[in-house]
Image (tube, rainbow, N blue to C red; front, side, top):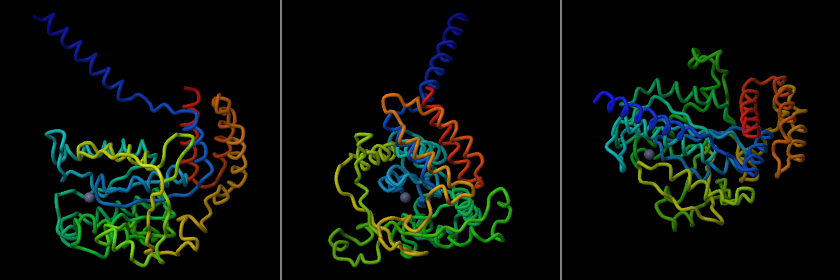
Length: 362
Ligand SMILES: [Zn+2]
């Protein structure tokens, strides 16, 4: 009997170990994917997308910003989705929040975005923003939103929900837009949550947008007829030849990670328009590039200007049939980046370079 129990224990340990090992298999990038990650090294722009729940985020736009614009793209989900339904298992409340947190992290690993949360509790459906603000520990949530802005230093913030239409959707949704709107300038004020300083520095984003779509207008018909002269618009249906996929196909793979919500999206190809309404800051004259007029090159950081040419050389000399030949240039780039004067971009780009070197040495 004892022998049997020991054998059983060994089986459990080995199979658990195998499962863990399996879940920790690193993502293996193709030569094309590595090149695309390398292109990111030359773009220094950050964007923060704000909504209330795991699954609120527009993965088409997040993937477009991360993979086509090459921006440092973060989704801030105020809650972890504990109050939702679970279509695939018995977990609800906190355990569902754990699942949905993991699903968001998996979604970001597909669309190359980053993920953050606040301490807002998903207590279930809320009729309007006023009720939500009353029930939430709102001071803590506000502090977390300001912390997210100071941590990700976004040039642009994009709200998923309209802050002006309380009662028309879940109260958490409207509240996410309201907090983002209210705190847009506050992250730059050193008297606001000074305990976050000096570990983080103050930060003023340049622009705030609302990511509108036809369903905020009631119908596609109404949206077609609506005056869009004040809106930015962009085709996020771009195709990535290096990946053999369209942006909307990547977004669909990302969206399909929300398994406990029963989501499974089919990718499409071709034109896919996204619309942004400016809420604060200056409207980019061309109305199609959220970073227009913002310096997103290495010259935005002290001692950074010479780095841009090194990244250009790295891309020019890249060998798709033998990516490992880029390792010496990446090590040299890493050393030079350490001499630049902006801790924020130094940390982000150093991590990206180290990750690339790890991929290249296998
Ligand atoms: Zn939601």
